Amino acid sequence: MVNFILLILIYTVIYSFMALGQNVITGYGGMLSLCQAGFFAIGSYTTGILTVKCGWGFWPTMFVGMFIAIVLGILIGIPTLRLKGDYLAIVTLGVGEIIKNVINNWISLTNGPMGIQRIPMVKVFGFKVNPYNNKFGFLLLSLCILLLCALFLHRFIRTRNGRALEAVREDELASLSSGINSTVYKVMAFAIGACLASIGGSLYSVLTLSISPGTYTFMMSVMVLCMVVLGGMGNLLGVILGAFIIQLISYLPELTGLSRVIPPQCKEILFGVILVVMMIFRPEGLLGRPKRQTNFMSDSKGTVLLYKAKHVCSNISSLFSNIKKGKGGKA
Image: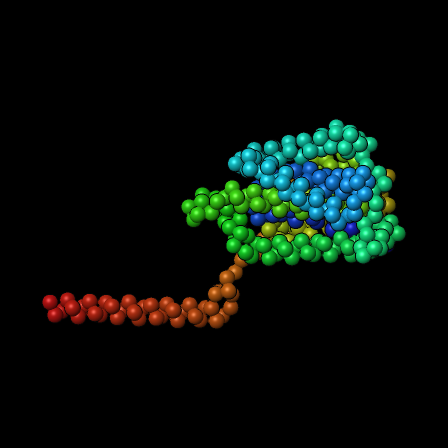
């Protein structure tokens, strides 16, 4: 039972990478993308191919997968991000299916439907982290990488680029009139989201030690979108919470011993129900979007300072009006 709970937590962390990437694209950028499963597959197959066929270690392959995902995200994003709403969602859905079909049919490189087996385990300082015998160690490793990525996003959103990206989400026309190039920031969000999904894919490959194209389906992208909507778009902690809840729901029949009664297809129906219910009753998600506050108005001192500034301005304006009246009387 303990190992099963650890496995759920590991999958929660791995899917959180995709959810954080989806949150950058949808929560901060305001774009509906459905190709996170494709970028997840890029990370998995980059690690699988380079470790099995080229003898590389896990860490270099993870960075190569990140680079490939970023490049593909930029190349796909530049022509497609001129679209909006449903049209963008349909195009990104097509991109995800293209990546899956390329992996499925490029037999000489990816081994086609048979996938890649016997992927080497990840090593940390020369020690192998066995995902079967040492699930707790693998969980700690994945969690450390996730915390670094979450810290990066936490800092990024508070930079000028992060604020510009949120401005594009709120009102693209107003941001353009303010001198913000919306296309650049949209492509940036797409590249970051692809990079994070690729990291999760690399970890997934060294968790299962075998990968196949049938894993990276459209339903995976829908499940990631459910995580973001459930936890709260634009909320880092909310997205991770949403990933945990969705994973818990996925393995609920096994946890309760009802796997023979509840068919596997029910969880897909449940994901759709969660999306509909959250959009109707709580569209901001469980935790909601955090409100941005400026330091000037974040405490009582800022309020007092604002009151004094208004008082000084009113005194200056009354002084100027008295001077004008004095000149008018002399005339």
